Image 1 (cartoon, one colour):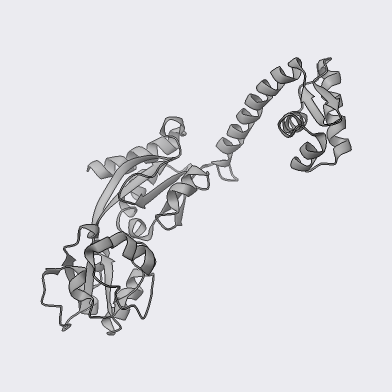
Image 2 (image 1 turned 120 degrees about the vertical axis):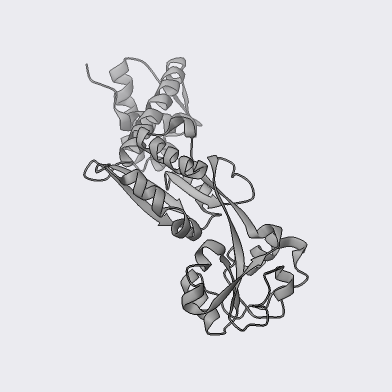
Length: 298
């Protein structure tokens, strides 16, 4: 007995939902005559009338309603199967797509990645650098499998777990008028040029983030995203800058810089690791998620 044809089911589902063969054909990128032929072949195969045709379009018969419900489930299963296979590379090895913000890539991922990949020759990880505000969406729509982002609260539409916490500080060159301070609020540094690329990536977003902790916008003449480049610019006297403390410490001695602790509450950041649905991840993704969460506990 000939099996049900997936493209025919796709056209049938589209016809029921669009209530029109021409609209269904357009949705499935075929000509109307081809869509009509597929439906007719499906009806001959099942020996049942599935659609009533009339001047306003089409509507399913009772048998068609039943097939529509089952076809939706079948097509969803096919989609899930394709997504599952897509998590493997071309050579059939397991592949995990992980997106993280720059701070995470530099500070937190090298050690757990080394621990996870040790002895796993059949696994590949694609690391993608992205902004924190984009990462939950990328996980939710399936662009990546796992994401790590910083935010005040876990993002909706994904399953998030606490990952790490860090602080950003203010970096100034040795000899700067502020260099003798052990700590300060950003408000105390507003008289000096500030190198841009803030924790929220634009001046307007940053000002919305810090709220009433500053009385006026900082003076920004130069923006630079790379942390090392930012520190080099600070060394050359082009301004002072907000940098994650763990990253800034890598450059202090070599570049003649001083790290000042920021007393503002927003200077402490929470990081989360997320997946689309924690209850339905592949075994290898679950292992990586467990490694990341174990790193947090450690």
